[in-house]
Image (cartoon, rainbow, N blue to C red; front, side):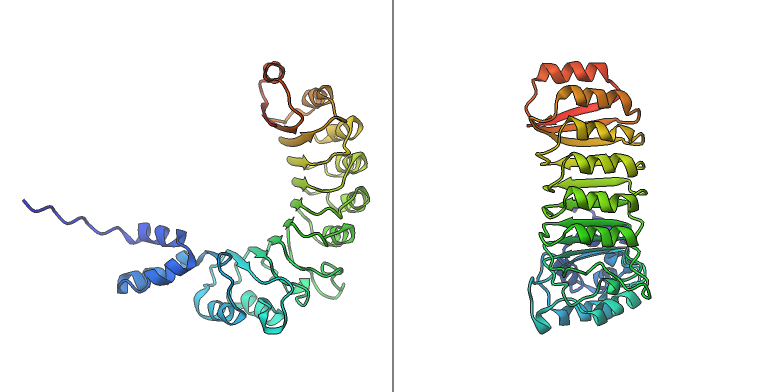
Length: 312
């Protein structure tokens, strides 16, 4: 007896599958049949677009902006070429203006290895609230915007592996935007003085990640003094942090998650003292110094409301 033909998948399911495919596979799917062509061009498939696996040219990006990317686009990831010249540069003010016009709902822009030396910060579409920069080239005054020009409305900023990002960059961006999230990774030019200057402008910050930054006790004092709305705090590779600095964040009464790398200058007793005074802390992740499992088990028993984990 011949098997019954399986009913075709509904369009709603196929749209979800197509949306998960890499860019090239989405374009290839449009060649299968007319039905797939219509589905591959549906707005839902192009809500989140990741171009970062490919080093596309500016010409290709112009084509995508004009003919492919819909007005419902929410997330766009791109990879450029660092220290590029002329037409090799991926972005330009004109291209970003076209992106702002054609994709008014774009709220997350992620750039990797992109040369931004000739692209003013104010060219970033005003709809973008999340900006992620990884291995990008930025000039000294990139975040400095004229008072006559409204700055981008960035609320969530991630700077990863950009050694030129320094204290004055941090002050410029924090004084212009009401940041909710700040993630700095591999920005070794950020110092205690930079945190001190920017902290009064970061009072609405809810999530702070500092990895491989040259900070110590003074930075922690100003974090505890000004960033009272923090719910998530991660401090890693802070080799100069001592008990005095760690005690300073006891004022963060809204803190729910704390990730710390502990070294010889910080005692476990100070960490326990923090657990006693931070009422909303429900996740503590410790790294760096090795602790005996029995010690961590006893701490967990004394603070059952907080999940404690350790990574050597």
